[in-house]
Image 1 (cartoon, rainbow, N blue to C red):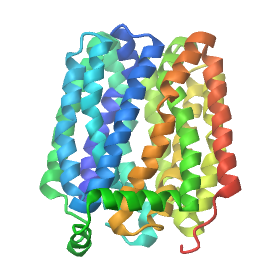
Image 2 (cartoon, one colour):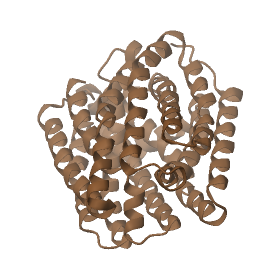
Image 3 (spheres, helix red, strand yellow):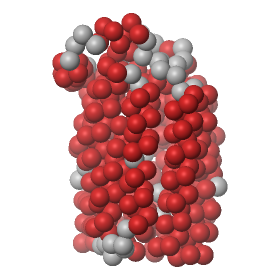
Length: 391
């Protein structure tokens, strides 16, 4: 976990350096909002395939090798982003950078296997905190770069810094990270084909009522997030009227809220039950688009930006701990991969749908869609999710 915390911190610097102004960069290369949605949806679709691959293979071969392999290949996509002269060229970079998704589910599994089961929610929260701490200041730094160099040149500068950070973080993992899938577990699985294990893992996911409920709910919520989140930077700068630097500050403050809430909320989840924590998150999510849409100025946006991280603090650690308790170690990464692949598959059109509504009817249509989907997601949880009795 110490290795994950250190490398995650460096990855956090990388992620928060280039992603806040990504949609504006695509637009600066000549894309419309609908074409921005296309690029983002392609990333989702390819990421889903890599998610499935990483989860299925890591339950056979171990976690570390896939984490390291993807960490060295994915930066090639960033190189393409840096060199791009048109938005169409970003599509090739998106294909390469999607390989980064191979490591997501092995990382989830390695965290679950590195701590006492009673403290899993706190472990997930600790890792997310480590990766998010740079977000307090890095987006504001990126905003200053954008204002000084313009979005087109400034984003290329941010991507160059990102490439260096990613290579450094992955090298730390390559040298110091230890495998957590034990020899006994691997030897038992090596007698089976990967496809057979994947089939049984997938069957277990779809026949498990609580996991199935979480999948449906999160798929609806992810569709809503994908429809709106990439366009928030456009809305804040063009409709509310803030500067690039102010948007970076808003992003940083949202990370402060996440860091301040993540561990206390995770401790509450471990103590009082994961279901209650997940439900609280569901009640908070519809407030996110409402707060952004009503924001008249920079200061209101600061308040709006704190809602999502607090909701995620209630949801993410509790949800992962809930799922980790339901499946054995030799199918844990595969379970995460199948579950999030289904969620991603349903959410893939979200970015395109949100952008098309924005282009055709204006921001109110996209915001209204987002609110409605968040409410539907929560109703699914209230109706069908039960507390895990084994906890």
